[in-house]
Amino acid sequence: MEVLSGPADRLTVRLSGRLDATSLGPTWSALTQRVERDRPAELAVELEAVDYCDGAGASLLVALRQAQERRSARFELNGADARIAGLFDLFYRATAAAAESPPARAPGFVERLGHGTRTSASDVLALIAFSGEITLAFGRAVRRPGRIRWQDVLRTAEAAGSDALPIVSMLGLMIGVIMAFQSLAQLRWFGADLYVANLVGLALLRELGPLLTAVVLAGRTGSAFAAEIGTMRVNEEVDALTTMGLDPVSFLIVPRLIAAVCVTPLLTVFMSLSGMIGAMLVMMSFGYPPITFINRVIEVATPSDLLSGLFKAFVFGVLVSSIGCLRGLQTGGGPAAVGAAATSAVVSGIILIMVADFVFSIMFFALGV
Image 1: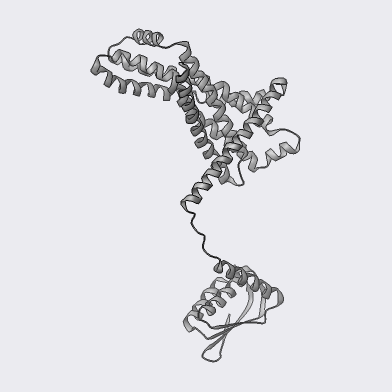
Image 2: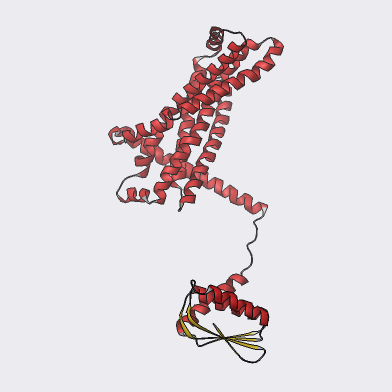
């Protein structure tokens, strides 16, 4: 950079060499400081000796022109070839358009409510359409069982079932202990502490067993399904399957859905048994023998209680695995989209579980089950 002498209110700067991102740092700092200090009425920039100019050089020239315009001063660009002049004009127009555009208005309450309603309606419609696709895929699988990828079914069942058994058993044991202690503290006031077995047994078989198992399934398996299929979506593997004439629903989702539906009732049984063991340990600590607890549970629990809980677990398994696969297929581009899909699968799965459990509670009460 060379600063030429001139009138007191005019500053002429001659630039030479390369105006690129690697060599422009010192020049940018020195030139902008000089302009801010002298505040010339006229600033002329000579570019005859410039060999190369990229976006960084054009940004410097635009910054100098804007600094002059803010003070209502003149700016001249001399000696620029056609390429540099075109690049300068392009950057200047883009910067001016960005400065003139009004700031984004924050959406109001009604707008946010409408957007949320539309998004929820779209999700419901997508889930309904996806349910139809799954139903058709299952129909084809029933007609031709040999086309099901049974190795994937077994692999998914191991990951979603046997690998989840320790956490399900531990959670059930803790829930049984907590329920027994909390209910025992109240029932002892009425001399009815023996009925802790009734309360815990029925609650685990009918409600807490399938509900907590489904929540664990949503956190582990639903998010895993969304992340796996979402990664395949980002890597365009799902598109490759479609190009090869393979149905992604039959190829990817049906094996996962079969595995999840099969292991969820089994995990529910282990969850309920672990909870009863935890409650029985609490009762034993208060002097009740194990056979007393077992007899009370056998007396109060009926096969319909067990079957209703297993039916809930079956439906919960369908919902959680389906929404996990759907969120995976809806994944956008980039690694952040995969994380968002996994998060959405967990949240949507838990919401669907609660809604379905609410419907089951009303339905079973109306039917007297």
